[in-house]
Amino acid sequence: MNKLAVISAFLGAQRNRYMNYQPDRDLAERMALAARIPDLDGLELAYPGDFGDMALLKRLLAEHGLGIAAVNFRSRRTGKWWRGSFSAESAAERQEAVEDLCRAMDLAQELGCRRITTCPLNDGADYIFELDYARAYDVAAEAFATACAHAPEVRICIEYKLSDPRARCLFGTAAEAAIFCRIVGADNLGVTLDVGHALYAGERPAQSAALLARAGRLFYVHLNDNDGRWDWDMLPGAYHLWEFVEFFYALKKLGYDQDWYAFDVFSKEIDVVANFAAVTQLTRKLEEIAERIDAETMEELLRQRNPAQTLPYLYSLL
Image (cartoon, rainbow, N blue to C red; front, top):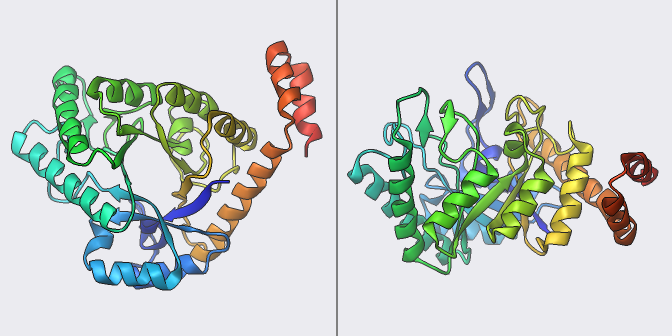
C-alpha cells in the first residue's frame, strides 16, 4: 500500500484570480493541520518556502511524526524567470535555476528524502512564433542533465501540464515528458503523473501510467480530480470514479507500490482538515474497489474486450 501525503502549500493560503479562500499560515501552523488529518503519513515539502529554517523544519517533522514524500522545487518565481527557468533564453537565468535546484536536492537529502518533483509551468509559450521549440528543448535538456549529474542518487520528477500559466507548456503530456527524459538520458530523471493534469490533457491516467512505466519513468504520483476542462484540484473520484479504479488497478500491475501518493486538492472555503480527511477516505475507498477486482477475471475480460461483459462485472463490485 502506498503512503499518503499532502503538498504543504495546500495547507496554507488558497486563492485564485478572484477570491482569497484560506489565510496565510506559517510552517508550524501548516504542520499542525497536517497532523490532524486522518490517515495522513507525511508531506510533500515546498522549496524554497518551507526551507527558511532547517532546524525548525526538522523539529516540526519529528514532533508531528510526518514523513516526506518529496520536495517540490518551485521553478516559477514571482519577479524572476519570466520566460521560463530551465528553457530560459538567458544562460544566466538557466544556471541560476539549476544551481537552486541542486541546493534543493542537497537539502532534501539532508532530510532523508531522495525525490524532487518540479512542474515547469512557466516553460512554454503563449503565442505561435514566440518560442524556438527545438532550442528550448535543447537548453532544458542541458539544464536537467546538469542537475541530474549533481546527485545521481536523487530522483528528479518532471510534473507535466498542458497549460497554465502559459497557453502551452513545454512539457504538456505524459508522452512529451517521457520522450524528453529519454533525450536527457539520465537514469534519475523521470515523471510525476498528476491524475488531474492527465485528465486535463485528455489522457486516460491508467494508459499514461503504463506508458511511463514502460519507458522506465513513472517516478511519482499526484492525486486529484477535475471535469476534464480545467485543473480544478478536486477530491479524487469527484468526476472520474472508474478512471481512478482503473488507475489504481494499473499501478498495482505496474509495480508502483510501497511508495507515496501526494494530494494537491484545493479546499477553497471548506475546512482544510475536513477536506483532506475526505481526500484520504475517498482514496482508500477507491483503492478498496480496485482491490475487489479479481485479477484472473479481469485479464480474461481484457482479452475479450467486450464492454457488455466488463462493465456489468465492474458494477457488481459496488
